[in-house]
Each structure stands twice: as structure tokens, then as C-alpha cells.
Length: 289
Length: 311
Image (cartoon, rainbow over all chains, first blue to last red; front, side, top):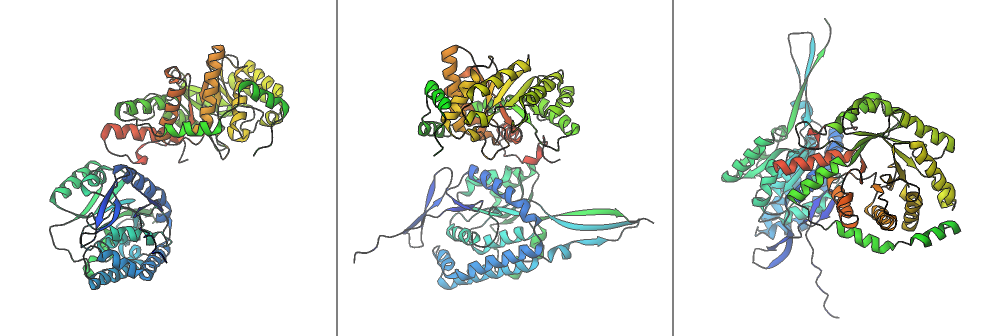
């Protein structure tokens, strides 16, 4: 029997619940750790980012309205999907040169991280909200609200775990996300998109783009509809992002890429991460004498 | 396949010529490939703003909502260099409220009439509605044709009704809505265009849809109608205007329609006296893109005031 023709995959970005190529039609060749050609990765543009923001805005309203309990169920379901395909995900990470053991460890940690945030989804509001004592006849309380669309900028190290951590902390609080995957190791993010698509997460809540940071970051910085930036950046990028963020009045939560960052640590997860990407609303309610 | 048209309609189609449906689809697909950037884009966006009939046609319309619509039409965005929209488009009962707010500005009051959107009322009632709207101060009347009669081949009846509405309009401009999706084929749309144009006055409009059915204005039926306008103009010298309505929500779509006009009818039709958009959400998307051209930053939709949404 003749040998089969090879069936190679065309990696695509996950935007608005669909798998897209860049509107520009451009791609970047991705090579494995041995320098062999692996696949062409979409090289997204600011217009792809604009489209992703539109998708996030559309899906975000419904996502924010869901109960915390339901968001937790969906995050748990996402963890289940990755667990069921963990071997495939580990291969995607190993492509970038990680040992099999290290790749498997990163996949497990990513799944556990999702489970962690799935647990927080219906609890953070109680922990972060409060009833405030005031010296007037008012019932005064503080509740949490999602910020809206969060721009996530993933680092190159821990290409899956860091991305999952940044996304999960944002969507647990009811935000929607437009994420830029690691530039040097985008493939785990592509595979994550395929798993998001089967996870009950409404299309558009998480959108993942691949491409050049230098091309995409200026638009992340200035896009008025993105309400916060969360991720890792070097000094020049941070300056650019913060200037743009000041112009468009958005929050920035940028970690320094020059600092070592342990994504596996317990301190890299928790309710403090959720708090960074929510708004607080305090209400004064008159209660009479 | 739709059933074969009745004899009278068949003869009209033979008279005005059939439409090459595949050709039209291919032609309009090309419009989406034009690269309109920078200055020409800004020109197109502002032109599109000036062509909008800012519309609210809902059962829950109130005088207050009409007032807000009119203010939005006159000044689409505070402090921005954009023209007013061409008109506001409202139900007949709201004409007098709208007229109050736009008097002294360039914004006109258009009113749908003739038992919009179905047209299923006795002719006497429909004519009375037109007269009432004009009496209240409507500058423009949007009528619907009798689609049932058209499809049944009673063309003389349809044309006669249009002629009577023309008469009832007096000085008001008339826009004849075909509800293209209910006419089913491009041949029928072209035939209806000619049927109407033969009794319209120069400057009157033909219009694609009511916006009340599932299928709205498309580049395809827009193309069929503007080609009919072109052929009619070349035959008779009478310039009929065009208004696509319904489903045009984004600036990009609007630019595609303008390209269609530019390439089919030429610059003479790139003016709000010859071309209109029946739309509501479109206006804010145009403003967003104009502001984006000015600042270089993509804009959030919520910084622009709602015209009609959000009530």
C-alpha cells in the first residue's frame, strides 16, 4: 500500500468563537526546537485586534451577566477539556524545546490553575465585596463589577501556563479577553483555542491572537474599548503601553519581563489576581431613622 | 425556483430587460475589494453621515424619543466636524413632533406612510395617511408598494396607486419602497423599479426595504436598482434617487454602497438629494470611524450618544 499523504494542520487564531486566519493573510513560519519547519502561524494585525475587540464586546455582556456559579462550571469544563487532551497539549509545549516532563508539568499546572479559578468564580464577590459601617442612616455596601474587555499580553516563558493564568484571572471576574500569545512559542495558544471552542465558554469571551508584539502592542495600548492591560512586558513596551493607556484611561497591570517570574508558584494565583481586573461599586441606600 | 411570473409581469420584464443574477453578485463582490484609505475614507464617511435618514420606527416611539433623535440628527456628535444627517424618518403620528425640532435646520422630516410596513390597508386609508403626514409638515414620504398585487401581475393597479400617492404628496418628495426581499427575484426588482420610475417625478426615490423583514438592503438589490436608475436616466433624462434601508450597520458597509454608486451612477449621485441610507445604528459607527481617523485610536462605542437605542 502506498504511503499516505501527510495531512498537516493550518494553525488558526480563535476569535469570536471561530477559527480565523489574519485578515492580512500574512503568516510566520514556526520551527521546532531542532529547526525543522512545523507550521505557518497567523501574523495578526491591528485590524484583527479590532475585530477581536468587537467580538469580545459582543460576548462580554452575556458573560458578565452569568452567575459566578455558572462561570465556575464553565471554567471547570475547560479544565476537563485540556485534561482529556493533555498529551496533545504537552506535545505543543515540547515543540518549543521543553523536555517532555517539563511540558507535562506545565499542562498539569495550567489545568490546576483553571480549577483554582473555577472555585473562586462564585466566591470572590463575597470575599472582595463588603458592607461598610457608616455614621449616617444608610445601608452602605460595595460590590464587584467586571471591567469589560481586558487585553492580555502573554510572555514567552511558560507559554501555556502564563497565558492560562492571565486569561483565567480576567474571565473569572466576568471580563472578556483579547489575548496576544507568546511571540516565540505561539503554538500552545493555538491548541488552547481549539480547547476553548469545546469548553462551553461562549465564543468571543476569550479571543487569542498570534503575531508580532511590536506590531500589536501600540493598538493594545491605544484602543479605547480595551479597559485594562494585563501581562508581561519589557521596559520599552511598558512605557509604550502605559502612555497609550493614559491616553485611553485604561488600567495597566504589567509585570516586568526582566524579572524572573515563577508562574508555577501558589502566589501566581488567587483572589488578589481577580481583584486587579474588577471595578468596585459602592452604593448608599437610605434606611430611614 | 420561484414560480413563473404571471403574463403581465413577464411582459414587463421582457420590456425592461432581465437581470443577470450571477453577474450582479460577482459585480458587487468586487466592491468589497476597493482600498479606501485616509482622505478618501474620511470623505466617504462624512458623505455617508450626510446621507442618513436617521430612523426610528417602533411602536414604543414617544415625542421625547423623537426629540432626542432630532438633536442627534442635527448634531451627530458635539465638537466633531461632521455634517447633519439628511433627514429623520418617523411614523406619521410623530411628524409634528419632529418638525418642531428640525425647523430652521437642514434636516428634513421623512415619514413612512401608506400602512407601513405591510401596505395592507384600503387605498383610501393609505392616501389619507399620506395627506395627514404632509399636512403635519413631512418633507418626504416613504410609501410601500402593494407587493401582493405586483406579484399577482396587477401592474396597472400598482402603478396607479403609486401615481395617486405622488399626487397626494404635493411638494413632498416620495420614496417608493419595494420590499425587495418580498419580490423574490432580481428580475422582479428591476421590473418594479421601472414600473415606479415611470410615474415618479425627478428627485423622487426608489427604496429597497422597510427594514421590517428578515432580508434587508443588500449590495445585490442595490445594484439592480441603481442600474435600473441608470438605464432609465439614459432613456428619459429623468434622474431618480435611491435609498437602501435596513441592515446597513457598519461604516464599512456604507462605503461599499457608496463605491457601488460612484462606479455605477457617477459623482452626480454622491449627494444626499440623490442617495440616502435608511439607518439608525450606522450613524454611530460612522462617527466612531471618523474619530478613529482623527485620533488614530480605535474608539469605544459608548462614548457616542445613543440616537434611538438605550430607551
